[in-house]
Image 1 (tube, rainbow, N blue to C red):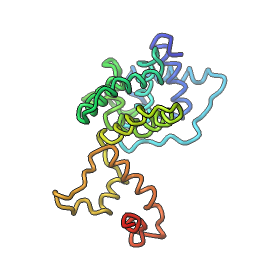
Image 2 (cartoon, rainbow, N blue to C red):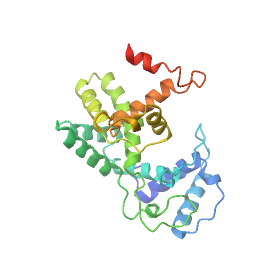
Image 3 (spheres, rainbow, N blue to C red):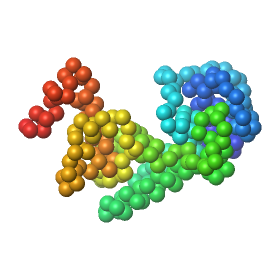
Length: 250
């Protein structure tokens, strides 16, 4: 599918993705003629398919317009189209090979971000750079479809877990070591309700500057989310009877 022209591939792929996610069932008026024409083209291609599979879970609307489902799908299309010649697995392994030569943390971090930006950058011609939500008016300023925060989320939820499993399955300790280094030095994703809750409960804001814990790295933020997942879901226990302090003392 990705070996055809970009326009043809764009229609074939996005008509299926938008349709499976239920985006064609939304009733709206699309003011931008370019977006409206393409949207109708994708919808017609979806309706012509013999089957119409749906994703198992409902696609939620993002609280941040920059992360709307439409933008996320278009952003991933550009990523897949950009690496189509090499293939998804091979292209990411090339990224790790390029990063493996850097031992200094700051340089490794800089190079990792540069590689990620290259893989997820949005072409200048993409009309969606000026649209945040389908059916809304254009924005004055353009924005990447997959921004820096979203790139970090992709590292956390897709890239690192997948390649960690691959490294262990293929017995590649050097790759596993590199993945751990990246986990610890990549920038933290934007704060969310979980991390803000944990920072407040753990009194980070009340610590003096000399003792304040740094929560500005990917690994530390993910650690907060893991603690919240493990210890803060039992409302019957409450913060007073939380087991975390006792475990830290043992």
